[in-house]
Image 1: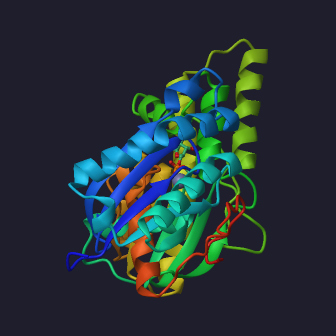
Image 2: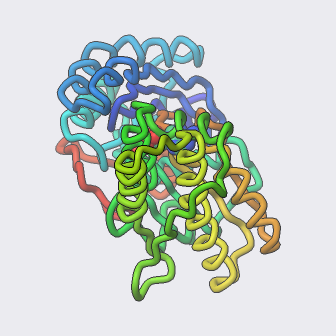
Image 3: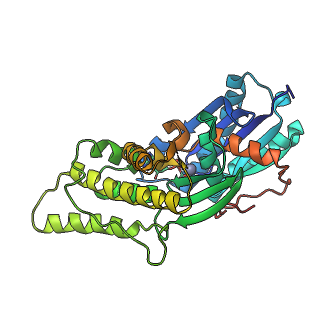
Length: 340
Ligand code: KG4
Ligand code: ZN
């Protein structure tokens, strides 16, 4: 409406109520995140019912704040985007209903966005030179995908987790060693005081697939190690357990990614998702990519974990391709990457 394409984007798939205004797919005019982490901490994880209720309470306030901070009004917005999956169904429904109501009232197009695609697109915000094709590693609380981004909104999945997601492993191990929720950042911090070589946890391989991941065996290995130590009356340093566990995860993620880069002859790698905020992963991948002659792109931590700016970016490329959602857009909790 002003020579630019401004998209109002809404993200409520888990425990952040987030709204952003994004210009031309790359410039973030506002990025408001109301995080519910404190509310869920007492329960040791996200409680879906609480997440949905909090979203419905906060969403209008967060939308208004995002518009105000962008210096924008609904008149000036070109489209309304919303995450419609994957995620918690009750949480997604709040964002979807909100986006529909706004798009209907303001007579704007509605664009449903895949959350995983959003995570990948977070890289475009701060890296103007990044363009497909490139290799992407998405590591979040719910997903672990190694993919080739063939074009904007076009993906080839090379590997995925066959059991727990990387972030889920961080969260479960953090609970086991008494660090609590949210596990990823707590393990990241504790590991800084620990020795990553203290305990040799196994690096799981998945039979028949060089690119798939498995983290549940690693989680069990940590639990077994802790139980054994308790039985023989030893008290392991939790910082060492955290650092050794983290190293096992980071090594596997780096090895598979670099192998794919070599085999598929791709020289640009982008990380995405909450676990890509992990300092050891960022450092390890930088080293591994450098040794393989690849260029690494990583979003700032605020764009690694859930936010709506990434949804606005993904929506822009879908919008450019002519994608529009109908008024029957529904939440799809199990939505896969590349599916509509
Ligand atoms: O992308 P995200 O915010 O939500 C999902 O789409 O799942 O990812 C959340 C996950 C959680 O499992 C959290 O523990 C993990 O990302 N995480 C981290 C770090 N920060 C967040 N894991 C390791 N190190 C971190 N610094
Ligand atoms: Zn996410």
